[in-house]
Image (tube, rainbow, N blue to C red; front, side, top):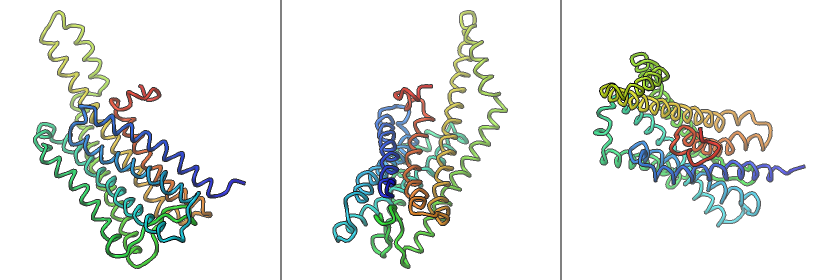
Length: 311
């Protein structure tokens, strides 16, 4: 019979190896693409960094800890607590990045003409700095007030060590994270409503595509129709991009919501150590892996280099 430790290591290794690879690929693609040289692109980079670091922690610390290390040494505990603090920082980096992405899409959809002026270089710098600053604020209690988040070899998972500070922070983590998800989903719903209104005014995307094709055939005889066709085609592309970005943000928020419910609530119904591991740390690792997959899936420019994603 396969031991619980081997099962845990295999789960972490498979999920995080794939997650690390796909997110690292997204990171390099985003940095090269001109379409992502904007506020939304820099926010996506923050998300990808969060995903890469999380997968790296699992691969370079959690897996070796289960297989080779022991908890009864001061050195192990010191390093373990450092990785715990980094995990808290990176998780909140992901959360605030998603809120920023939803807000960015909200401005792009409701105020498209003002978008470039609103998200100038100064604003982008402020937003990215604020994301990192707020994320670091969550780490402060773990540095100065005795809150502990660490990897447990015996439990095969990351957990909050019970004390007065941690008990408060673990509950706060759940409610604050869920609040962030609700805000993101609320903005996404507003974006969806606006997209629906736009669709009613301009017709479905399919109809726009048909009109565009028919107009292109008349270019030879009518230069004015050509300009009109190009404008409609550009409008259609912008609309399609907005729909893709909406679904990307919406699906990512839903996955985070499910992960939070699993980590804090579903785990209470776990009947074994393995199921508890799956409901907590495995769900957490899978959340960051799927985050990269979704980013790749909904952006043709990113997935173009992956054969199985060419569609």
